[in-house]
Image 1: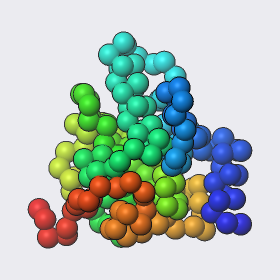
Image 2 (image 1 turned 180 degrees about the vertical axis):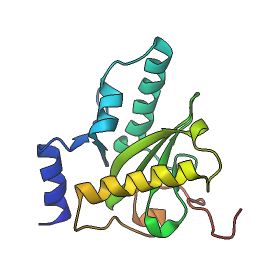
Image 3 (image 1 turned 120 degrees about the vertical axis):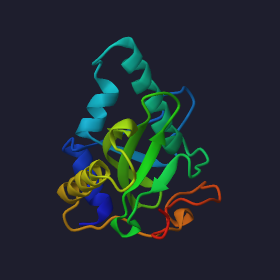
Length: 174
């Protein structure tokens, strides 16, 4: 089975959900696919008005990817170590800042696996960062047992519309 067939199977089995742009007249130019937990966060009213507003902003930030808007390193970033292929989408409009972790199944197809509130993660090499990255990897393996995510630090090979910039942290950077 191809990765396309695996993705379609996951959608049919409701293991992945397609995030479509909600603004009238907009169409999907890239695919943003969410696991059940992320889908529930975006579609289940849970919490006070402030949290619901924050979730609406998160949805809008994720729709930026699906709509095909330009992408920069403040929005999309490859987490260390690059060999693990875990990317984050940064939703930073307001507090709390939210990180959506995921992988590229193919060019312009992002599989969002899990999320974390940035304030709960600590420094970029903290135990909490490692935990959420391991969780992302485990969800990928659960979804796509025989397929590896796309790898590499050249963002333009992974997503169209990427603006030049540094999308990853060097090993030597501390």
